[in-house]
Length: 437
Image (tube, rainbow, N blue to C red; front, side):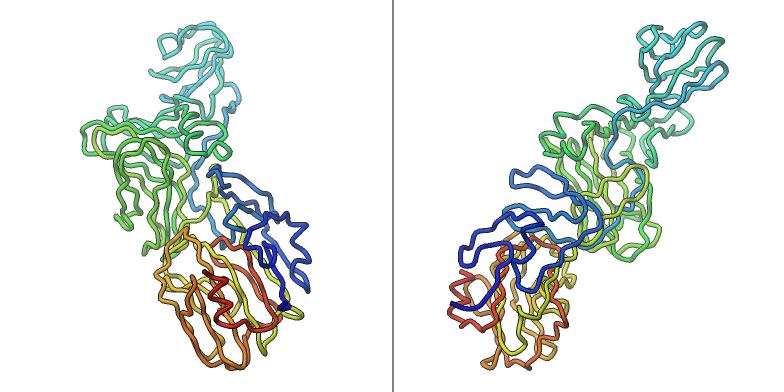
């Protein structure tokens, strides 16, 4: 039997194994290093979004999720938290229209004229008319409360949602509503735990826009949001990356990727005339592709890179060897992503799988499709190099005698990877064809 080592699968079994981090060590002789300095969201096999803490790998049947570092540049609340309460305000305080309050004491003010169902202590209401608290009265604001709205008061827009700006149609209203059933249907219940979502209703005034706080600082940006209901567009400032979203009965990820952006660009959600649209999880990132959710809570938020590597000593020989992997890419932006090896031993670029030994480039003109699994292999040795994919030899060349991999080989890119097998002897093309079929 060939001397080899297997990561994320049993040798020859072809079956992915969801191994906990503690079990990964020792699967490759010489040791394995895994690190991610932050938590990470991923989808399990049922499509439900799950969370793993820092330095815990995210697995499903596609393998282990590998992503680059990224910052969600929005400064709004990408997911709306549970209710919280501001300190009570008393006599003389001027309340803000469209915000939600709870009666603490009532002596003078008739809150039923201000939107409340009654004047009972504990009653919550959204303020509908101007109110200055009278003697003996006090209320506390229900922050993030259902019913909180941004709207046009006849003179200007009143903005009551943190770092979101409603504009356009003066009949448009942006409201916080209960979307528990819709969040559950979208399998986002672990992310949006309050069940609340944003709702925009427009009239016939030419459409409305919601500008998301936070700006791009790079020349390449991708944006996404989960949207349900009516029609409109997502885009950056100046209509850059403008993409239509159609009516959807469930919260659906809508995205625009690899946008040529300008520093200072904001993400914008446009809503057409006479529509009702629900959304949450807005996420502009200065990357060529959208990544897994990075929920924000009034400020930008960052997910660290996944760093996964193993030593070449005892595992990989410059003289001869082979590597097999099952890879599910998550992007088609064309950006260069190393999958195996810090020096492009196996990588994705321009939507093609490639391998480079420092001298000769091997390319499989594969026109890679995102979220599709590919079985890939490379071999090197005195007889040359081969790049094999999906049961065929895709490219061959002479071998210059060095992988240029340094002291370790990293696993990376933006993909799922499983059943990685490293052999210290070359396999034949026939063996690799059989393995990748």
